[in-house]
Length: 140
Figure (tube, one colour):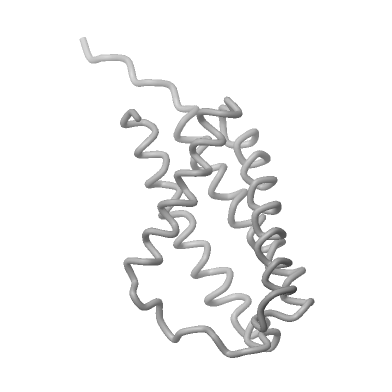
């Protein structure tokens, strides 16, 4: 694992954190509160370190998929790749949870993957931008 990969994963984690707060914590908070079956949301993430670990893990997965496995370079190809990964991951998790747990209703189980797709796509663009940058020429 090189520095470029680590920085891309860290940038991805920051992007996931910021977008997660804006999308779920601000813009769609009322929607999801109205569409949960059981009130399971905490007022603030606790333990906070678990949120960091989760975002780092997902950002590392996206960085692996974009930078190592797919070979996507640049923001747009990486955005497309990350959008597909995010959509499939969220559909898998949300619909499995819909069938097995009393957390989200069908409406939220349809909307959440769409929001996750947006979050993943933007994060993928950040990762792809970083990985696709030209290495700076050494100073002479």
